[in-house]
Length: 255
Ligand SMILES: [Zn+2]
Image 1 (cartoon, rainbow, N blue to C red):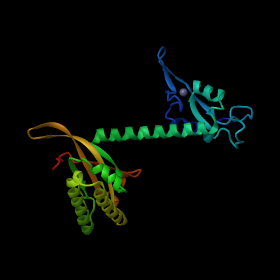
Image 2 (cartoon, helix red, strand yellow; image 1 turned 90 degrees about the vertical axis):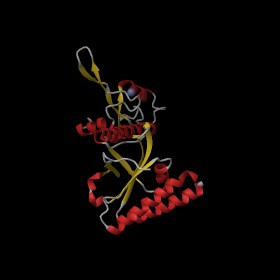
Image 3 (cartoon, helix red, strand yellow; image 1 turned 90 degrees about the horizontal axis):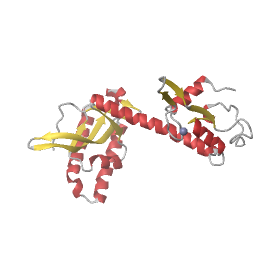
Image 4 (tube, rainbow, N blue to C red; image 1 turned 60 degrees about the vertical axis):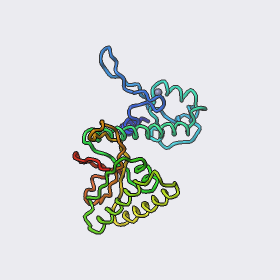
């Protein structure tokens, strides 16, 4: 049996062209004649031969299925096959899953940094509980609150009140006892859940931004950004549960 082209493409792309063990790039440049050579090997986790590495773990209908393959450099391929007692089936499956997660997270982070650098955009997580609220408003110097996507008048007024209360809370935040802080934040969490029931979702982030104020040298400040968002206004702004927004160029923080 041979590995299908589709399976190979999935394996290579999910691995980010890197060895799942040493993370080495699996396509290297041969400087002398400027050509590429491939170090990567599509390795079977369970051998189709019973005497082969991990061959006694279980019988498989298709040994060339993606679930039985891991992408490694030649050295690490030899390593897992020479030491199958150390590199058990479970350990290799775990290595593979963690590696693919690592690739995905690294790319996602890179993409977010790229979007931000190109468009002055921010990618915000959805706020679902008071712990997230605490992280965002704690020690903030300035606030950027926005509910402009809400068209319904009643909801819009309620969102403004929510933000006014949150701003008041932030002003006295550092003086509050933890128990009181938590109580107030849980109140806000309950309100967010009520907004969610009306279709309004909250997204936010704690940002570090540079600002220059009169008579004070340019400095870095912590900005608490929270958006009450009506997804119907612009559904494409939400991707994979995160909201991408642009801070207006003329935004100047107010204390
Ligand atoms: Zn390797």
